[in-house]
Image 1: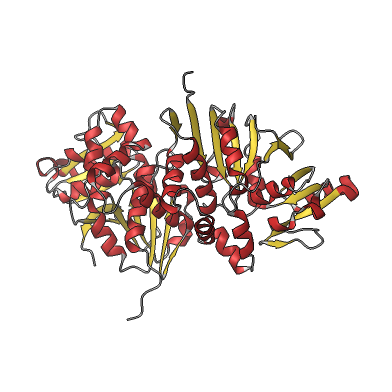
Image 2 (image 1 turned 30 degrees about the vertical axis):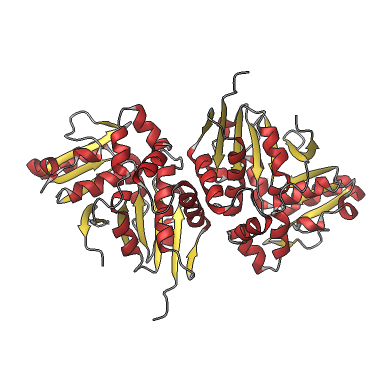
Length: 251
Length: 251
C-alpha cells in the first residue's frame, strides 16, 4: 500500500488562519487551558451535547430553549459567571452535574477558534486528555489543520505544545508540514521528554500564560487535570450546522 | 548587585506585535533568510550604511540621491531585481562590491518588520552571523522585543529558531518571558544540540519555508552562509529618523 501524502498545517492563533484554506480539511481546535479539556471531560462524563457560545446572552438564550435539560457553564476572567451552574474547571464536569444534560458553554478564545473553522470538512476538539484518539483519527486524514486558540490574540505555550505532540505522532517522511507545525514539533521535543511524563507536562503547562493565570486564581488543580494524557478515548466533533459538539466515533 | 528584572517578548510575526508596547524597548528585527543576514554582512564588508526600502521605486529614488556612491540590492521572489547591482545573497556583499558604499536595499518582509518597530528605543538587526554580539548587547537591556519577519504573513522556522537562540542565552531566573519567547526557546532546544553545530543548524534552516524556497532557486549556499554563527561582532542599528542601518558599538 503506498503511503498517503499528508499535509499538517498548524496555526498559532485563529487570526493567522485563512478560512478559505480549510476546504477538505480535518481541523482540531485546541484550547488546552481550559475549554477543550473541559468539553472533552463533559462529554466523557455523559453530557449529551455541548453548545459553544461566544456571549453570555447567547448562552442564556440557548439554555432557555432546553429548560431543565440545560446546564450553563463557562467563565469570564477564569471565573464562573454569575447565575451559571458551572465554571470552566474540567473537574466540575462529572456525571452528577452533566450526565444526559445539554451543556451550554461560553468561553471566548475557544469559541472564536471554532468560528473560523466553519468551512472545514470536520472540526474536532483536542486536548491532552484525549490526545491519542485525536492522533489516531488524524492518521487517517490527508489534510489536517491544528488551530491553537491562544488567549486574547496572544500565542499560548500550552496550545502550541499540544499541536507539537500531535505533529510528533503523525509526521513521517511523506508528511508536508508548514513551519508552524515544524516549530510546534521542535517545541514539544525541547520541552517534554519522551514518553511524556505527567509531572513534567504539568510543570510545562504551569509555565505558560494560561497556567500562570490559573495559578493566580487558585486553580492549580486544573493544570494537573489538563495534563492527564489519554484520560478518555472520546473524540468530540463540532457539527457546524447545528453548532453542537458531540461525541463521535473515531473512524 | 541585585539582578535586573528583564522582559523578553518574542513576536512570531510583525502583525502580532502592538507597536504601542515598544516604548523603552530594544528591538531585534530577525529575517535570517536572508535580509538580516545580508544587512549584517554588507556592513561587515565595509558598507557605510544600508537604506531598507519596501518598494523598488523607493529604492531607485534613494539610490539616485547618492549617485555613484549607491549600490542597489534586493530581491523579488528570491531573485535579483532587473537593473539592480546585487541580489539578496549575503555572499554578494563583499568589500569589492560594497566597501564605502551606500547600500540601498529592498526586501519586503524584513522592511515591513522594521516599519512596525519605529516606536522602539533602539532597533537592532540580528542573524546567526552576529548572534553573540546581539545577545551580549541585549543582556544590558531591561526590555527586549524579538520581532520575527516571517514570509508573506506566515511564521518561519528560521526566524523563530534565532529568537530561541537569543532567549536561551539571556533567560535567567528573573527574566519575564511571554509564551512566544518560551516556545522559541523550547523550539531551539528541541531542534539544535548545544553547543550549536554548523552542519545541524544548516540542516535545520534548510528544513524551513525560507530554506526550501532557496533550495528551489538553487541558492543552497546562502543557507550554509546564514548558519555561520558569529562570523562578525558587528551590531547593526536602524536609525528610524534617517531610516538608515549603520554599525553601532555594543554598549
